[in-house]
Amino acid sequence: MRVWGNWNPLSEREEEMLHSAALRILNEVGVAVENEDVLTKLADFGARVDRTRQRVYFSPDFVEVFLASSERFDWDKAEPYVGGSASIYFGYYLDPETDEFRQWSITDMLRYFKIAHHIGLGYGSAYVFPIDEIPNEALVPFFHYFALKFTGRASASVNNVKWASIVLEMNEAFAEESGIPLQQVLSPVHIHLVSPLRFSAEEAKIFLFFAERGLRIGFGTMSVLGSNAPVTIAGALAQHLAQNIFINIVYRAYFGDKQLNFSSAISPLDMRTLMQSYGRPEKELCNVAMAQMARRYGARFFPHTGHSDAKKPGPEAGFEKALNALPSLIACGRVGISCGLLSVDEVYSPVQLVIDREIIGALDRFVKGFEVNEETLAFEVLREVASEGIFTGTEHTAKHWRCELWTPTVFAREMFSAWKQKGAKTEIELAREICIEALRSEPLPVHISERLERRLLMLIKEGTGVAIEPVEPI
Picture 1 (tube, one colour):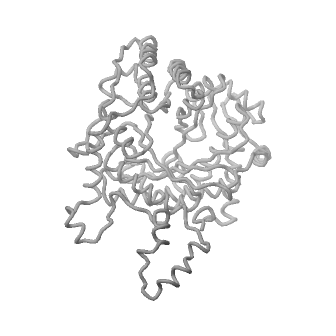
Picture 2: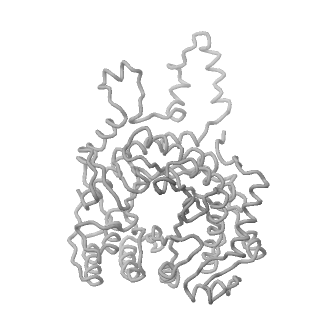
Picture 3: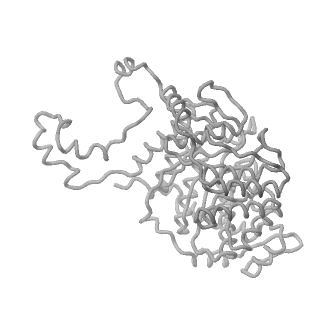
């Protein structure tokens, strides 16, 4: 039984209208590209360029040929994916022992990663943000050092081209020691198109620094209904779709990529508070519509899912994370939970990490569906015990229950009286106990040698003038 991939919420007429609107945006509105080298590259590739306005335009015929000449992703043979990771952005650490909100410190970053490691989650250092222990002029290279040491991959952030050289040199040193291809180490690095349909001067410089060396970095996008995108979902989808097509054109122009990759990161603006909201149903409406458009074009697709606006673990967080995952899972079979993350991108809760790990397990079981065959129909065992009606002690049950039934860790799995006898602990209390156990466990593993660590810290000192002490695992 396949439970995902056949849901088309858009009618054929609506799908065609979105496609036509995206073509019109690329042809008549175009994309601002604030770099002469990129303008020249795209002109050579077939774009219509207005150098005075620094804009590129793509005719409908060009886009149709571009899409038709792409290698189609086989959605029918795709395997479902449910995953999640613990990433760190700016904001507050929600201490599982004291329930205190604290601005990030290096120690709390290590605690967060340690708990994620203990419960089997991936983890990574994403965007650069201020921390008291590190001078601002060394933040970007420090975050890459921290990420390489404790995650084995680069940090996501290169927010100014002046950092590109030192970041590259640090990652080259790691790739050389580990034997991992440099492109793989650099894969988290990306730029963000802050303004839709605008490839800014700084973003273009960073992209070109790596592209000229044969290295690709990612393009992040974020559209907000009623802010940097039309408040109507259809209008925001058309804009986002045009932007996705533009990014794929850039990758093909520079790297020859034939495979299309689409994503969706559209969320609404709260019109009273002006908060960008992650826990709203409009976000998933955008995800499932973009999934259908990706299937139309034969593109790989990954939605922005598993988020919440709640400030602490609780019913709101659980509902919003599920709301932000299940529709996408049914529509495209791919979901990534932003584990531990609350309050849009502001609060990082180890307790929520544990609960989100539980959510991942349940969603993964759901998307795998079930098999219908002679063995699973269980006719012979049914004939044998049907009169008694108890299948618990049969060999058939012993053989199949582990793969057929999902078993929770912190969600309830006993009736009320048994639960009360065991201490009447909620999932939040049980998750907190797991966090405390993790913090008392073995130190977080490291991915670099002492020799490489000295080299990385020397590169930071040479590039910034700041001497940074080694960060020790806890």
